[in-house]
Image 1 (tube, rainbow, N blue to C red):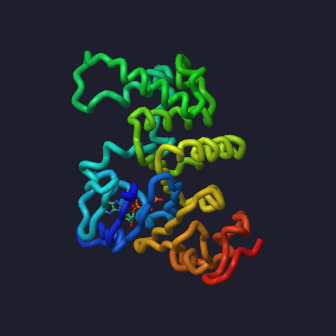
Image 2: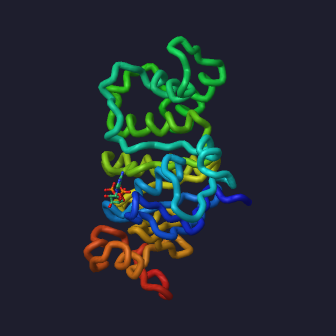
Length: 256
Ligand SMILES: Nc1ncnc2c1ncn2[C@@H]1O[C@H](COP(=O)(O)OP(=O)(O)OP(=O)(O)O)[C@@H](O)[C@H]1O
């Protein structure tokens, strides 16, 4: 099967400053993967390259076998929550429908029947159908979070990428968020990009740590060696609050 995302020896630079160096990683269909890493480690840069917004200085990125410029229509991208203006006077359904307009659509472009259908399906998938006529400003933080995910789902993606999705939601909303991701995995691959290790521990089936180099481990466990090389500080400092299950030494079984 063609992977949802394949990074082959990817190097990305700003001028002579190499930010991502020789990164390789594969995300298969139906995977729930995490790319974690410290601030400044290159996560945003790698995301931009996956979305076809930055050129590579080496290697290749494939999205379902296509280069990013051709494959990006298959990606639903959920930017960081704080980049949205929820005070904007618009309903949930209008916000989602807008994402269906092509970039060069004129002012008076009308929505088609399939746009309404995609909007309704997206709301259904994340359990917000009952709120479609509500102003986005009236939603709770967790509901707003789901609305921006619905916006990405309305593009009918096969790969959903979420940038720091758990930063602004509380613990109950976080549980709901991960149940929703589990359901979405039936029809797509999901990648979350985060520096919040505790949020993703035990939830994902594939993980990579990015700090200029990309460290992977073949399964979803985070090893202390992986964290030490990525974060450059003692593992117990980083592991604070992380369930034991996800931390193990190379070659050892789980210790819970
Ligand atoms: N447009 C740019 N021009 C030059 N250097 C840049 C540019 N954008 C980012 N960088 C540098 O690239 C490195 C990686 O930044 P990037 O934003 O990708 O990291 P990040 O892991 O997303 O960090 P954060 O979690 O803080 O958003 C940093 O050293 C940053 O200063």
